[in-house]
Length: 50
Image (cartoon, rainbow, N blue to C red; front, side):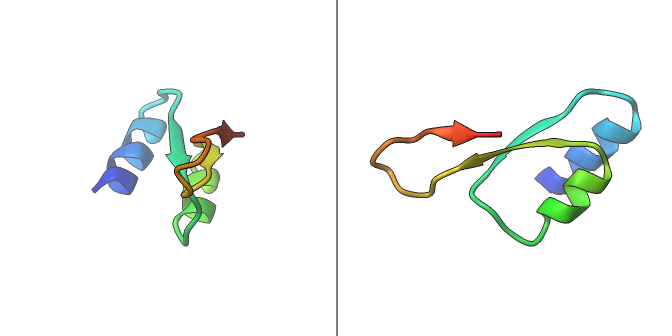
């Protein structure tokens, strides 16, 4: 659901940013021009990187 909405918003010309700990949808999101911030799935720091 989130991936569909993010792609739809990007197609409408909106700037879309997604926080992710990785996964198979990242290439699809990038193809739609969506910025991805990588977040560690570990609780210790909770830091995201682009």
